[in-house]
Image: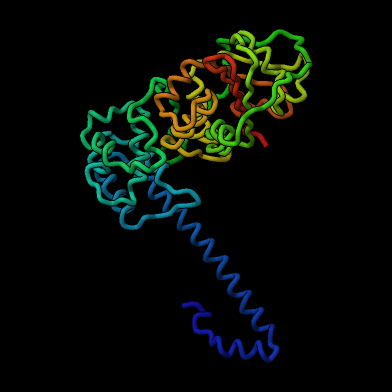
Length: 367
């Protein structure tokens, strides 16, 4: 029991009324000190609890899965500022047999508060190439899962665009991961120098909704800064002209770019762009661990949809079809906006199928 538990509040109020404010200040100081200590202890409990959940999730076998399920079900632990369930789902998909996961988490239903874990785990498995139809419990989840949930928009089978997804490697002692954002050697179409210093008369036409869609993956990964722009062209432009046009567009990410400053650009395939956006969202930036596989999948698709100009309300299949019909570019530049650090800067541009719309995403993880 705290020394303050038995404090006679009526006597304290009487002292205050008598002008004895010093004793009330002393009481406040004691309370402040005890509160600070309680917060410190709570944070330590959270840290230790998170480690216990991590170890259970990383330990293969149905026994550890059963105990983890019981802990999550009965105690519903909160382990920090973000809900732990997407992270737990990612660990489970990385370290356990699909049959064990299906039997433990999808055959025993009834705890609705764990549907978030099931939904995240389902998409983590899909991204790793698991066919839900091969496991009755997973197949039934596609029918009974909450239809209102944001992840319900995602397809229940892995798209060809998603086949090259990158995942972190985790163990009890740590993790290793990286976002593959460096400009490749293959497919380079750098514009010749010196380039024109004239800026294009085109104007950014991105609406607030389109802007939010384009930057969705970068925002989810909590990178340092991001920008999005959409330019509508008066006439169709050939893909070969886009590398010359990009550095002239009125975008802050290319402000100050001189006629001979480095501007590198490469043609990329839609799956390579999706892979970059997925890594950005799922694994996060230098000071963040991202939103993990399930939500990384969602926000990568959201960014692809905005970049390729998919209509509002389009399905994942419709977004994929439009992405396949678009022409994609990956660029870097020596400007103040970009910092040139490895795996910390990139730009993406998409030329629409009718070749009359160019959408651009710029991302940097350097403050």
